[in-house]
Image (tube, rainbow, N blue to C red; front, top):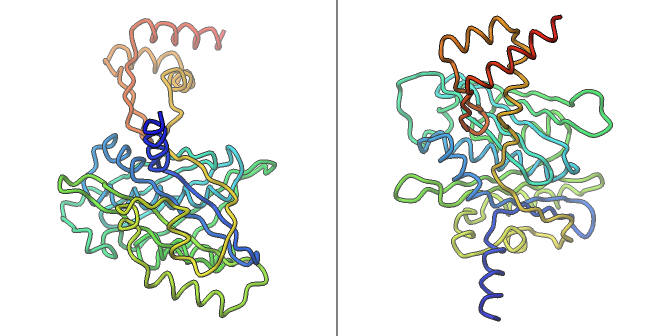
Length: 304
């Protein structure tokens, strides 16, 4: 029984997780996320090559870290609009640990290696949107890309848009088959009242830390990693399991089709356009003739 309990404990510890902490003096907050399985699921769902998987993973880790500072089903959306390989990078997360995302390519035939990281996205912008409780409208900010590696761009965003000194570390490692083996991120933000020398100590430490994937290989979880690398003591505020998860469903797609009108739905049926694909998770849904007939009937009933 003890061996079984230890095995279950080990499995639990190795699951993807986001851990948020606050320094004991209250001057810094930080979050570390392990998103390895989450990112691998996204890579497989979307059938991504290494370059696309690399950037989507960094986007999802970033959105998970920002979402950790929100509440419940509050959401954060990170969008990067690029001009080279990618037209768009998208990631959306909730504080409760759900994340989804996708990439849109520009159609260029030029091949890039992950080592060319600053050239892959090209000139572009980073937009962050927060959908919060008790706010009638989403809160949004946008900045130009300064590096194209997501990490420095995210830090720049917080300084420019929210006046919060921020340091961000992101890491992705692949196995020999080109699939994501480890993925995660670490973000530290200064709180009101911090001292410059404290901030500099944080920045200096993060400049020299071992890649996060090395810590994951050693079996360390996000809390243990922060104990290793942060130059301050902290209290854990929140620890949340994270997963690649999309709330799409066939019924949701069918309800959206109702907005097209009866004639357009009839045209879809006649032309055999019976497959719908969720761009967020790449799940495929198939519409049966009975579904079309019901949609047409409901659409006509609305116009009478």
